[in-house]
Amino acid sequence: MNKTEILSKVDHTLLSQTATEKEIKAICDDALFYKTASVCIPPSYVNFASKYVNGKIKVCTVIGFPNGYNTTASKCFEAKDAVENGADEIDMVINIGYIKDKKYDLVLDEIKKVRSCCEGKVLKVIIETCLLTDEEKIKLCEIVSNSGADYIKTSTGFSTNGATKEDVKLFADNISGNLKIKAAGGIKSFEDADCFIKLGADRLGTSKLVKIMKEE
Image 1: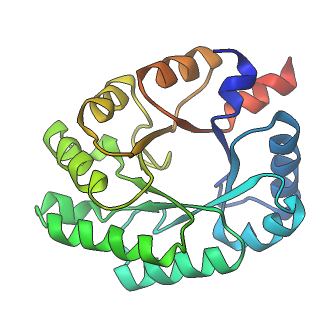
Image 2 (image 1 turned 90 degrees about the vertical axis):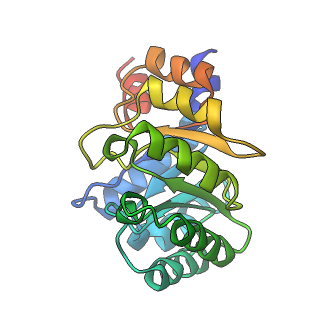
């Protein structure tokens, strides 16, 4: 897959706590120029970015981020607020403690409730693979497959590790229906990106690939 094709699957990401409006504008400009799938930005900048790109590129944001232990009601509010501000895609973090407690019904219920608040916008579910056992990851493939979400996503990029090739393969082997895969965190080269796509990832969360293109 060539670089243009790979970039078309990238959520060009800036989620730093210190992100400024100037920096958000810059990644929007880069995403427009390199034709990435979206920009993934903090919720507070969604309204600005949505107006700035004016429908020329998708605006993605995060909820329950990065720890996932917010209440379901707060995640639903965040999702509604993001959509009202112009978000096209929502990346939510699950409650990882619920998985550790085997409260699978609560995890499924929460995803479904957030899904209902997205008004048909794309929903990606972040499960933070680095904090889970393989058994837990497989169970989440089942849960997210049954939730109505559009994607299962590996990582926030804020924990102990990002996407791994092993986890993307595990996803590909265990998801069902129309669920797609997003790999995020630690994707540092086009070679990495190509490998993740070949293993089954349909989206990539990264800021590195556009930086490489600009340096070239």
